[in-house]
Image (cartoon, rainbow, N blue to C red; front, top):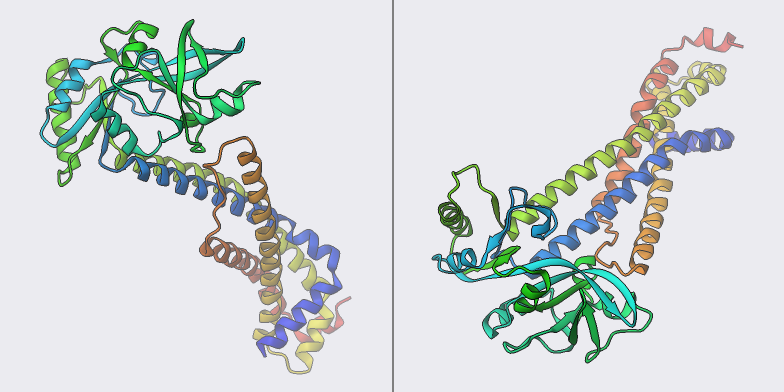
Length: 405
């Protein structure tokens, strides 16, 4: 019986092709937006999590200022960190290694072309160089890592080497940073993130000279020893730095955060943004639902004599109700199918377009629950929109329906 109802509903929709297409317009626009936004945001979230997995959850970052998220540069804040603080952190129980980094923006000249990039000054002793390599985002593709004796040497990101200047930069070439010459000794592998692919690393002593920071550093990165509780180590770092900087608890002019906490915060922000965007897209689903309801009310009026005939030959109120409810559900599901197809297509086009710019960490992700959820939701919207018109159709009195003109 239900199968017959579906067949009858499809026949009725085919008789009103134009109206049916216009009715599902709002539904598939909404589903298209939802699928596109969720697939891209989920792909971005997965990629960010993957990058942080490479860094490792046992890493801790200490930055000046009260807000953790922001440019990794003291130029954005009056607060700074010092090498003495890095030494204090390095002595804390549970810390395997801590190292300070200078981060600033430099003007890079190559073959008379000028561009601005982020420059990191890093310690070049073997222990800390080994630690940096373990992070996994600074791998060398060509050339070598720093040696302790290096000065005025540079390791550049993949994008700087091959996508920025008219002529590619190769190992052994010379570049100028803020007017000072540096020899390129290494080129990093392509990571797919704008930050790491557009990064220049130089020895920290060269950075002190370049940016006139004799003792200041902009960030401290630390690795927690295996088996240690990261939260306890963070508490101890905060306690030591509060004492050194003479600030009370709750008034810290620095931030300490683990990679795991950073991931959690980023995921929370992405989830919030995703929710807002999906909420906006859902407005079109509401409009689509209203369109289905309007179409079904019109259909009830047009088919009133037909309803009277069905009742006269034995159709029950619940049979009429099911026919109209299934019809509205099919309208919603049809819009959902079109929306999913368009959403997948648009997401892949956006992914291809972004990858063409050299940013490879944003990819569309299509989970089975996204597809099933979108189709189920569109069907439910259609069914809910058709309840009132279906109730009206089922309650029509047979005689009045047959006499209706």
